[in-house]
Structures are given as C-alpha cells and as structure tokens.
Image 1 (spheres, rainbow, N blue to C red):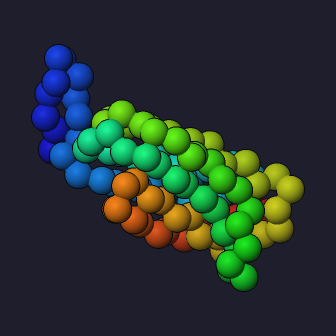
Image 2: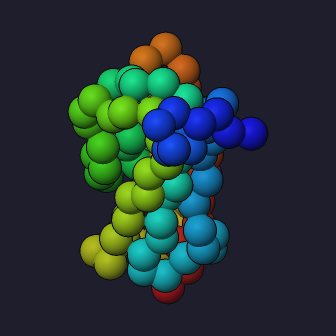
Length: 97
C-alpha cells in the first residue's frame, strides 16, 4: 500500500528483507520507511558480535537498498537488526560459501 506525496510513492508500513537468502558472498537488504526516521541497521553473528553497521543516520520516508558484502566472513547464520525510531525488526540470513 502506498500514499503519494508530490508524485513520489511513500510506503504505509515498515518492511525489511534480504535477497538472495542464502547468499554468497553479497546480499541486498531492502527496507521501507513510512515516515522520516533515524535508521540503524546492524549485522551480528550467532554469538551476538556485531560484524557490520550498514546504516546509521536519518532517512526520509521511502524505499532503500543496502548491500552487505560478507567476503571476509565464514559461512553461517547472521542476524540483521533494523531500528527506525522506536520500530524494530530482526531477521536472519544464511551465508553459504
């Protein structure tokens, strides 16, 4: 669902996904914001250690894509944590080498 603002489509809800999943060695994390927010997107290994901060800043409402390059990481399950204002989502992704 979209609302239009000056001929620009703006999502009505938050959404987060990565593709492809499983991936080797890069994946794209896509997210959407229904309103301007401070966005924090981090990737963690299964031990809870942060392996990357992909986004840390203010973003306007809209659609975004961020590439995650895991060339230097071992195969396994990784968790990505998305926070936009008070809204949070957590997803898992699989790196297969």
